[in-house]
Length: 138
Image 1 (cartoon, helix red, strand yellow):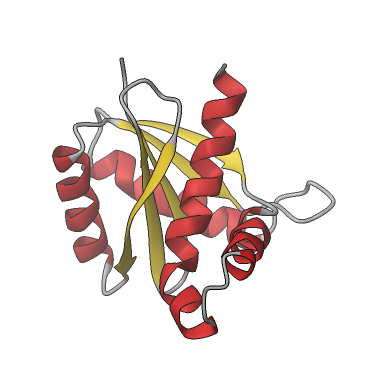
Image 2: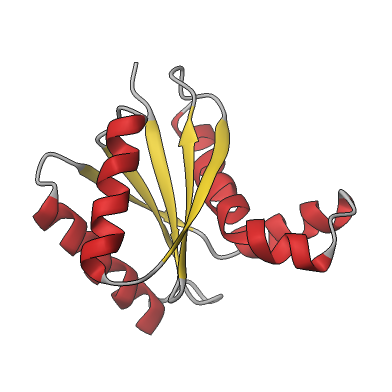
């Protein structure tokens, strides 16, 4: 059994979710407030240790037409830094085009206030990314 961790990488935050040990469901863990690359990598390492995983799924924010733009390059650069800091980690990319939209919609349907949505949206987007990845593996 292997646990996966997903990342929804933004400029100011990184949403984090993890799978259960069976790889069936994704749960939101936290939103890392980005300070510096060193701090981001340190916190990510702590979370990988805590959840005993070396398998990361990064959302890849493709354009709606399927092409990769500037955001994809930024995400791939960050994941290259993760690989440098933690060479034993395996990295997967998952098309996250509609993950934030889906996360927002589900929070609105759950009647979560706008202010609360802002606090959990990145973590929820990471859940959608990971759940899509897990479902595709079945």
